[in-house]
Image 1 (cartoon, rainbow, N blue to C red):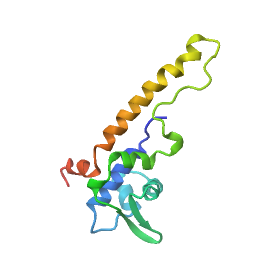
Image 2 (image 1 turned 180 degrees about the vertical axis):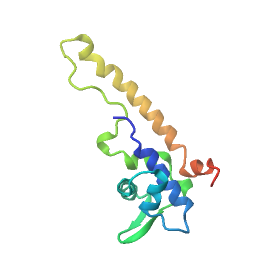
Image 3 (image 1 turned 90 degrees about the horizontal axis):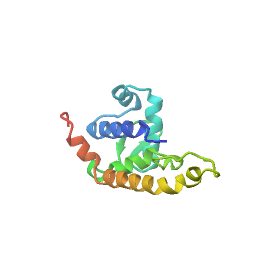
Length: 140
């Protein structure tokens, strides 16, 4: 339910990888910046790899972006780290009372609103690139 911190951490990971093109972006190095365990970084980096956003090689330290930061949208990142079962930003409670007029009709009333809100969010994320985020940081 909702957007987990994986999204923000994934943006952080990709930003670090982009800023360290000449160095080795190991999970330990990235974890120190994110202030988390390297296992968390490896798990999220694996999701980013599966989505085709980063290149990682078994047994070789480091990762690199598969394309330029200006070609990766925040929507690409969002979809990479939000598995299909969590694809819906807004969850509707299950099993409302079908004998209650509100319970029987609430999902039909709010699901279209939730779908429109999610679509607006995805449209917004699709219009922003990782490169734009990187350019907003004073160190880059």
